[in-house]
Length: 237
Ligand SMILES: Nc1ncnc2c1ncn2[C@@H]1O[C@H](COP(=O)(O)OP(=O)(O)OP(=O)(O)O)[C@@H](O)[C@H]1O
Ligand SMILES: [Mg+2]
View 1 (cartoon, rainbow, N blue to C red):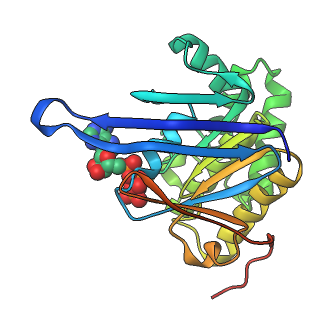
View 2: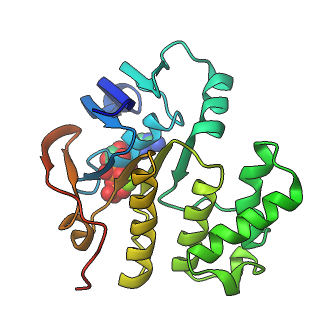
View 3: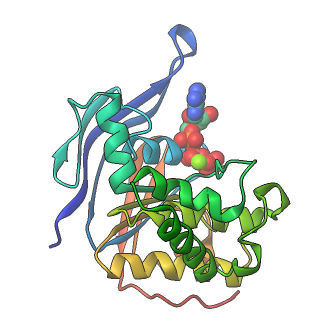
């Protein structure tokens, strides 16, 4: 068994106050190993993005224990969480969260600036990752001039730029066609093969059909976990 990148136990989370308070996660347990690519599926509103945000130290759980890369997060303050996130987590947001005023490559380079990479090195690394995702012709464009699928790939590139050990991807192929989607998924699988922990939220049955390990969330509970041997190829539908 590989080292654990995520060890979550009894994670609970509610939103709202008083009468309108609703519990979204009812005590979720999950382990993700380094070198593993795991999928998180489940109906809309089942708590997938909430859970991913907790694993990425973006949201705090109301209760439960969370260890990331062997470190217990429960006593961390906001600054410690932000530091951990910057160094170790690549988060692909469901709504991308890119800087509108910047070019594609600049959005990726920001992540590298935060890690102290020299500007020229950051620029060429940012461009290299965008090219690997098929965005070579778009690197100089402002993100306001990109299609949704292109934005999604810029978001993937930004998440991977800092070489994080834990990659959390919220619907990373939702806006992509079959070919771009399988490129992005192949890249995420390669990262797992290289020893990273990758957790992908998806509704995409095309991808789930060939996924190695699928955890299904329903109404804030883990409903099932399936494991089968993993394939890195996707057959087009
Ligand atoms: N900031 C918030 N305040 C209040 N309720 C929220 C907030 N964020 C999410 N919720 C609610 O929590 C529930 C779970 O939301 P979440 O975004 O985690 O679901 P999801 O499984 O990612 O859904 P989808 O597949 O549609 O992205 C939903 O009912 C949602 O309306
Ligand atoms: Mg979501």
